[in-house]
Every structure is written in structure tokens, then in C-alpha cells.
Image 1: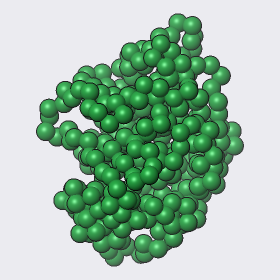
Image 2 (image 1 turned 90 degrees about the vertical axis):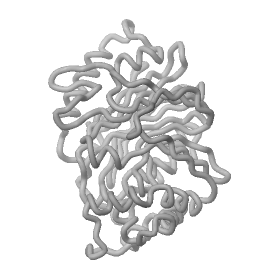
Image 3 (image 1 turned 180 degrees about the vertical axis):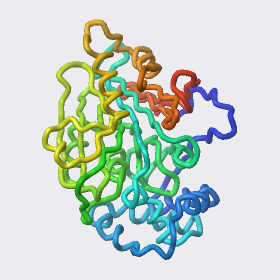
Length: 344
């Protein structure tokens, strides 16, 4: 990946972490790079060696479906000097206790810049914000991918790989708990290293059960094939867009998934209503990359796509052009961020 431009000079906005080699190597490098930060997160989130569970409660299922990520977790523990139980606690923290989430994903299937996708991470500033960091991961023999991931965890909230497959998720609570499933966003990480097309993504996600907390995901490939994928413990559904636009906002859209989720997000409902308004007449829309960025600059009442609190803020945005192999990263609020541009 070649860095095209970097206008970010603030010291708190960390550079992209680059990792390569075997999954054990990748984990070890990540642990070494972030050892002090991982210890800070463990202390801040109260992850304890005395917790009434063992690593096998999580790793047994992960080893069935994604054994590479088990190797990575062991590597993170080795590199950071933390115990395997501590790293499992951080890697499966969302499944042990959820945090507020209110992300938005939008795809234009076609336009003057080819397919384009925007995905923001909206969270509470502070601890939740510093848990996330961009990561360029190059596993030996698999496609490289640029992603936004939780420090100390082998997952991916959003990203794009060198094949031009882009995906982003927004959180969706599950009614059920499936102990045979993998942790939150771990199957998304697998998608980025194994898939080249949206159809391959759907098929892989159908094969891998998740443990609990799920997602409304949107995926697009370099050819412009788009799908909305709702997935929770025990259920998954796929929706193809009727027109040129698809969007997700923490609200299930697939009928077969809706009974398996709980706790409608008022923030998500507000953003869904705003997007319906913005996309009501596709003949009047600008489907360029700049048009997508302008959409993510939208503020509104009670919520906008660029959120400024009082609780949730848009803290990171990935704006991706799959057919061009380009990703632009917004650090902070999209409306006033200078983008970093990268190309595979």
C-alpha cells in the first residue's frame, strides 16, 4: 500500500500500524507495538484474571472456524507480556458486555468514480475511541487489508482488501447466545483476508456462526455488487438494494433477522429516517466520491450522519473506492477532517 497524502499532524492521531507474516507473527508484532496501551485498556475495562471463565470458553469455538485468529491471540499475549486470559478478555469484551455504538455505512453501487463506500465509527470519546486504530495487515499468502480494529483484538470493524472488497458493520444486539460462535467482528476479519467478491463474503459469513452481539453490515466489491447483511446469533439475512444506494444504521432490515435482535436504537432510527430522506429521489443524487463525502457531512435533528454528541461522536471514517484500490481516512468528525489517502 502506498501513502498518497497525510495531512494529519496531531500527535494523538496515531499512524497506521503495519503487520505482516504468519498470524502468530502478526499477533506478536501487534502485542509488542501496543503493550503499554493494552495494559491500559485491560485496567480501564476491568478485565480480571479472577473472572469466572477460562480462555477455552472462547477459543474452542474460534479454533473450529478461524484457527488463524487463535494463533494471533496467542501472539498478542506473547508480544504484550499479558496473559492469554487477559487478551481473550479484551478480544471478546463486546460479547462479555456491550458498549454504545451508532455507526453508519453507505454504498453507491455505481457512479463516475465506480462503486464507493463510506463507513463511520461513532462512539464515546475517550476510552472507547482510543481502543480503535487503523491497521494494515498482510498475512503470508493471503490478501492484505487496511482496517479499523480494536487494539489487543484480532477483529475488524471496517476495511478494504487489495482485491477491492470493502465491508463495514454497525452493531446489532442479539437475543440469543451461541457458545459455538466466534467473537464480535472476528468473521469480518476473515472476510477481508479470504474474499474478493460480495458473493464470497455472503457465503463465508453464512458458514461462520457468531457468539452473540451482531451487526448490520454492508459490502461492495470492485464490480459494484452490493449487499446488506444482517447477522446475529442464530440468524442471518441478505438484502439486495432496489436502486443504486444501500445503507445501514444499527437497525435490522432483513425480516428473518428482526425477531432475533433486541433493543431498537433511537439514534439508529433517526439516522435511518435521515438517509431515507436524503436518498428518496436517486435521480437528484450525486453518486461521485465527493457526493458521498458531502452526505457524511450532514448534520440534523435529532441526529446527523456526522455526529457531534452530546454522547456519541463520529471519530473515524473510511471512504473507499474499490475499483481504484483507494481508501481515504477521516480522523475525527468527517465534516472538518483532512483526509488521509492510501492506495494498494
